[in-house]
Amino acid sequence: MPTTKLMDSFIVSARKYRPLKWTDVIGQEHVAHTLKNALAKGQIAHAFLFCGPRGVGKTTCARILAKVLNCTNPSADWEPCNSCDNCRAFMENASFNIFELDAASNNSVEDIRELVEQVRYQPQAGKYKIYIVDEVHMLSTQAFNAFLKTLEEPPPYAKFILATTEKHKIIPTILSRCQIYDFRRIQEKDIVFQLEKICKQESIQAEEEALHLIAQKADGALRDALSIFDRIKSFSDKSILYKDVVENLNVLDYDYFFKFSDAFLTENVEAALILLNQLMALGFDPEIVLEGMASHFRNLMIVKEPKLQNLFEGSDGLRKKYIQQAEACRLSDLINWLDLVHESDVNLIRSRNKRLHIEIVLIKICYSSRKKTELNLVDGPQKEMAGTPLGSTVSKTEQTIGDNPAVVKKVSIAASQIMKDPFKIPKLGNLDTLKQKIEADEKQKQEKLIEFTEENFLEFWEACKRNEKSASFKVMLNSTQVKWDTHTITILTGSSIVRDSIRMELKLDEKIRNTFSTKNISCKIEIDPELAALEEKKVIKKLSANEKWEMMVASNPKIADLKEVFSLKMDED
Image (cartoon, rainbow, N blue to C red; front, side):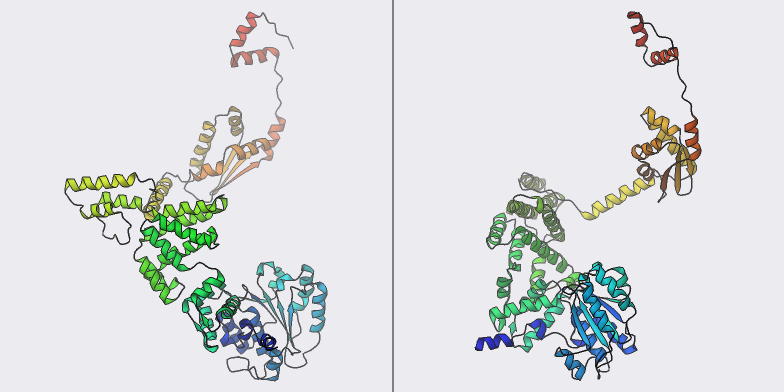
């Protein structure tokens, strides 16, 4: 019996700590500020549409707005008093003027017609009759159409607040009749702030890193974060520890990725493969490992640049740990690692042996700095060698680099040993150098282009006809006429066959782009009525037998010898 009483009295945190005022709303301050200004100016629309991901406060803001509209004693900054009869009636689900409709289960034409019928009657208490329609995108097309007229011209006492997670499914005629408010995903720091406030109210000791992990797992939805919070709270009672969150949510501990990075920096393939085996034994898929590894490398790259450190989402203790490891990494290596992980993630779906696929990636990352090490040895000592995982031979050799020929020879031997390493992986090279080369090639290409004038185009067109190898197609091209304009070329022909052949064979658009410097040149191929009429008037002359024979001999003189050998005679027409 006592257990039953506890179960009956329990309220999930998402309901227990649902905001009752605008000041309690987390992460949607832009919406709250706009609505409060509209209330202050008395410019309240008759229909609102709240759009955004799940669990970010759409229905909560709709309820607060509904309370304020009927509140008899709102504050100076338009907060509901939550103590007048109208506010209390709504909070106790006993209001006769505020109606909540779930469109997911009431999506038929009959349901909407019933709602429209209710709108005709004035409110019993309060100033407005307010309808909150949740998941409005679930309404059928017929239901939307039945709702249009009422939504466009409702009675002055009627207000509609629609909420949806899929704005693109709502027909444009509904969108045009509503004031649209876009709700954002709630930032991780805001979710952590709310969880810390709840922990303080309930006297729960929580580790900051544990709350950050809950916020990260919630993916911008405060309701999801509170659901996870309840789950962890049930497991650990009055304390929320990081290890408990990791165990219950089955997420990858960031310590694994710090160990992976240490293995990569020291070229310790064995350690990397053993770590992967441990994660696979715990049931983590290769996709999750690659995703976490990419996120880890991204965080290392961000904290390495002071101006980007505010993009890092995590506790201060975790930030310090990332900064400490980032100091041992070169930015070029981090970019290379990210590139390898991204490429592997893209190709993973096509791999039959996913475990082998990710093992190869780990080996590549371990030895990805070998080529750079070899270049460092040949070019001389580097100013910044922190975090470079060199072998013992390389380290000793590098320290003795100088003008001594014997030392240079020693360096060459070390470099040749690295060159023979079976795990040497080629790198893409410096991105800035590659970018400069591409820009130089593009500039050189642009310098070769000519101005788009009538004279230049006619020369271009004649060259196209001269370079055509097919005799029949060359005849087709010679039968055309060309009109030139500032940005337009029109090729006129009298036959649809010629028109289609030019489109398929000549590839004019590509040739024009590679020849002229002028941009946005359009090329048209049209049938000219006059040329078409001339084609129809052409009379194909009927050749005589002698004329046909002469044409055959002209094309192949050996036919004449064949006639004499076999004493052939020619029939007369």
